[in-house]
Image (cartoon, rainbow, N blue to C red; front, side, top):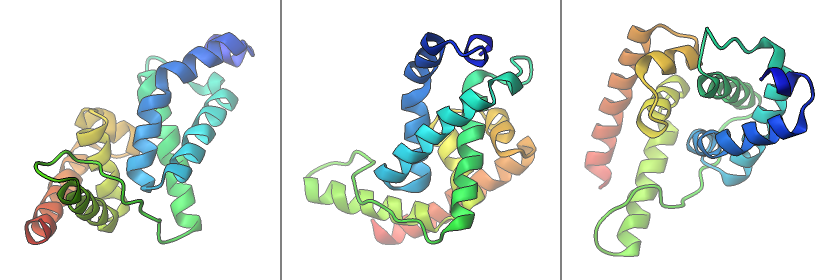
Length: 166
């Protein structure tokens, strides 16, 4: 990050290559739209370049810091415009036909989109991005117990909604 701060284009390219996929995946799960995810991922790396001097390795892993930037940008965007569009691309693997997978994916995406922002974010960070509860808490600026509570509520809501839909 020091090299990125100093303007080293090769270091910035390396940063993007290493972290673009997980950041884009996170952005896609939050926004539900490929176009919005593309914009959010791009903005995340531009902001990381601008704020490279603010990164503190002792406080958080680089991936956690980048997710925090993406999270903050997404929250800002959500506040600017509601509701978020949801693509219906399949995001879960299911048995049988392509139509059944599409139906399941649509139900999951719709249920995920109906979750409150903080529950959706916690669930995506932990279940989809593979972060620990502590890392998700850092990204979201919350305590670990608050994240655990958000996860429990999110899973409960999804289970209730999806048991009826699938």
